[in-house]
Amino acid sequence: MIRLDFTGVAFGALFFCLSLTPSLLPRDWLFQGLIGGLNAAIGYGIGVFIARMVRRFVLRRRPSWPPWPALSYALKGVTVVVSASASVLMVIPAAAWQREVSALMGIEGPGTSSYLRLLIVAVAVGGVCVSAARLLLDLIKTMARFLIRRWRLSDEMALLIGTAVMVVLVITLVNGVLLRGFLAGANRVFQPQNATTQEGVVQPDLRERSGSPDSFAAWDTLGFQGRSFVGTGPHADELSRINGRPAKEPVRVYVGLQTADTDEARMAVLLSELERTDAFDREVLVIAPTTGTGWINPIAARSLEMMYNGDTAIVGSQYSYLPSWISFLGDQQKSMESGRLMIDAVHERWAQLPPDRRPRLVLYGESLGSMAGQGAFDWLPDIARMGFSSVLWVGPPNASPLWRGITVR
Image (cartoon, rainbow, N blue to C red):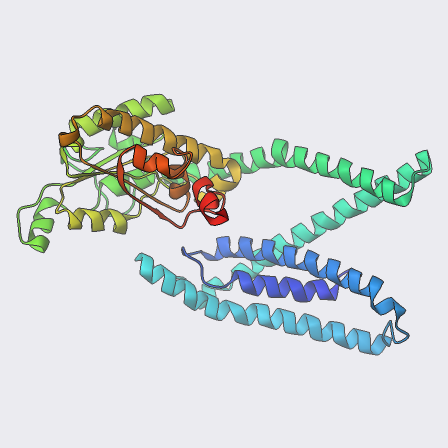
């Protein structure tokens, strides 16, 4: 507590509370704790900077500064109590908001008591970030003092050189060591789940699905999300009952990371699957780049299949089994390259068909899947030029190239 800046504490609590406001997609307590801790650390840093500027340029010229010790301790105590109380109480409506978002997505939301665990994660992450920043500042000051003694540089020049050296070292360390170690650890954590199958999901026996006995993409190579995608969804008899007329069996094509050894080989299997299932004979062909885990929104897929009474084909390809936020931090280019490869492969085969025999070409993606879909295009006219009749990108990350270009313009 001795080294805490209490203006920083107040700003850190404010930023933490703001991080708990409703999100587009549901967040579990672990992910929200990570986000909250990072935001609190950023807020703390901003608060420290503002406090130092105010003290240096405003308050130090006033005769009433610094305040009496008793008043100073009282203000610090009130700041800590109010900040901590606000942070804890804010979790209660945050849990309710997450339940609302989860209900819209058709999944179970968090309970308030279990969601409170995010506070532990946030405190740990925020503490580590603030401690790391302090350590970095101490190292910069130490290097600056060495430069001043060794080469008699001015204070400003020594701090500038020390900061530049530390920035280079930190970037090198993060990119070269920490990031690789983090991704390696994440792979070890999430790889076992990719080998499992969701409860209630069984191997399909329909020729219209990848993973079936006749499929070129074996069931056990599709990954957790791939098996869930091809092993669920409406069938022709259900669609017939809903729409009141004979329906077709929807085509769902998917290739997993283990389906083939290379990206090119996986695309070859994917095209073979499209040919095997007669996907190019359907009214609508949807290219659906996946999220980081390989997920395709089942509600979006089901809705399209109901709209067209099963006369559809949806195709996806897994490029990772890590959650989207880890894939985004670790290698966002990988998602875009994977999306471009799949879109180009399917489009090339689609373009070879006579114009009157081509299905409507649709592109869909959500979250990191939307970013993956944007990787195939330089700008919006390319979408129409390639013959896409519809595109739906849901929740594109701010780093998505087309989305960023549109918002800038």
